[in-house]
Length: 284
Image (tube, rainbow, N blue to C red):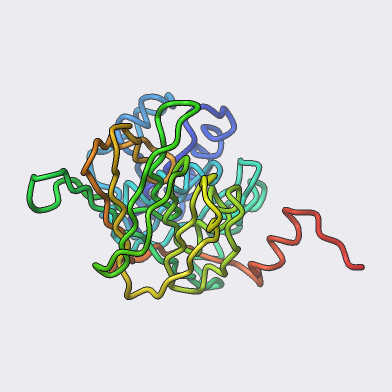
């Protein structure tokens, strides 16, 4: 019996219907299925609710868009449980299975007709000025972003790489992304696209007020520290979730995590072909 947890988009009616369909299929095939308690209550399926942590499952079924996948990675908290991602979103960089193929994909998974793809995660630590060791920690699949709070102003950010000063930026913010996150916010800030099969750190300034405005692609054994200088505060977001506000002298440190995210793949879904489809690229 496989332990399967379902995490579904909480504002999409079709996500509820798919979750019920998946739960019936899994139960009929001898597997145990549940959802996080609060989520099951919100979606109107309290009978599926369980206090058991998501990381205790053998398989996660994500039903939603890329945002739902990011929430799954947050809930897993570093546990390398394979994720089947059903697409109800618009971007679908992280979701592979279309809703009509959901139960067929579950059957293929249990028959071993699939493979897993590992993705790098990012460890993020918050250091308060004069507070000693790191306090709060997070993991990200896409990125950590330190960004201005006041419209019309820049923030001053001091970037260190492996404990050595690199330079300071007057900018709207700074993005530290994984290869998976290279197609998220960093892409909007004109950062490069990196295959998710790589392990690397991508450091991209957001609207820097200086001539050096290029992204840096760093080795996976390098650490990036960003300190907030000046009196203006900055917001820290991790995979789109605002998690803290930084003041002068506060800093974050980012490094590749020892944990990885595990995605279940069916067929030959190649990254460059996903890009080609999303951007409508055509042959010349």
